[in-house]
Length: 436
Image: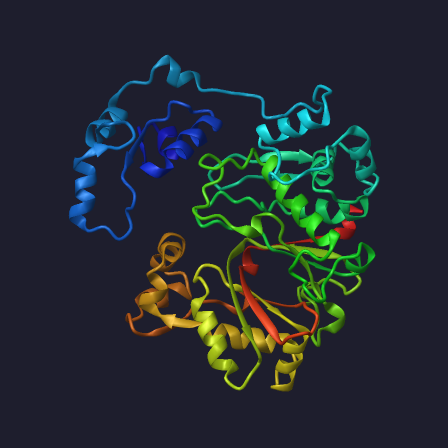
């Protein structure tokens, strides 16, 4: 920490439910004896008297008076153990000792290298076949990833990505898409307590080339390519960022089914508008994957019917303030919006941004806006500064237009739409063609 570097002693303070995570994070960052004190959970929504009782009470982890733990942590001289720190090898062995298929599968589960579904064992021959799906060298660095901003990055090579692609049951033709997702650095196994996932949208010719499905059941398990690519991204996120261990490197409170596989293809051929990648500056002939941080919520509806404006306003109000939506429209819904005057996709996005409103009180009564947006508001950054000063009952806009995405997919059997959390401002777009 900067204050420690300047000679100012510090003690990290956490709530007790994060004790294991906090101590492990200190260890992997080379400070296993970092001085830490703990108070009970929750903190948000407690009265001043309740919070004072935390401070005057017992540290629930260290089982000592909290103030004593704090004072001793600030004043006790550093020991030889404190100064020694820790270092360790972050690489896993390239090859395992030979064994039976049953023993190896059990080993993979025991080491938490799987998602507990059956895997394809990554033999040298199978990995070599996967590597034939790209012109990149096996030892070439693809990217870096970590489960949360408070942990160290891990680096990974083309070969390591190939191992996870084999485990997921992917085919070599899918490998450029998987490499592009890995290159984004966006993890599908975020450790946030909010249980984020990583929805991904694939655009361009690669969809047809490898048999990705974007029609009936576009979000469901009706394409080997869609499912295997999504699962490969999830597995590589788990294994190449230092693990995804419940209570240690994964803290999603209720979890998220999107963590298993969450890759979809846009139905460009049936869309009345330009596809996502063209909207953001790519050519229609480019193959691109967009990886979002989101997937926390899903809201569904039908239309546009007579009362579509009210229905969409209600849905937008229900979306999380910190996570703008990816609006997924069946082609019949998209054409319905064109009939209502939205000749361009941007017109619909602008309408969504304008009509995504809640009261200022409701907007700020959210843990994410309190934690991550309020500091910008207090510092005077717009539009949040004005929203922070607004009276509690004043309606405020939740999202900027540039944060919202509209994607067309589905098979026209019903005029259905969904909103899935995914802030475009935090998404990464990677050209798949660069990884062929």
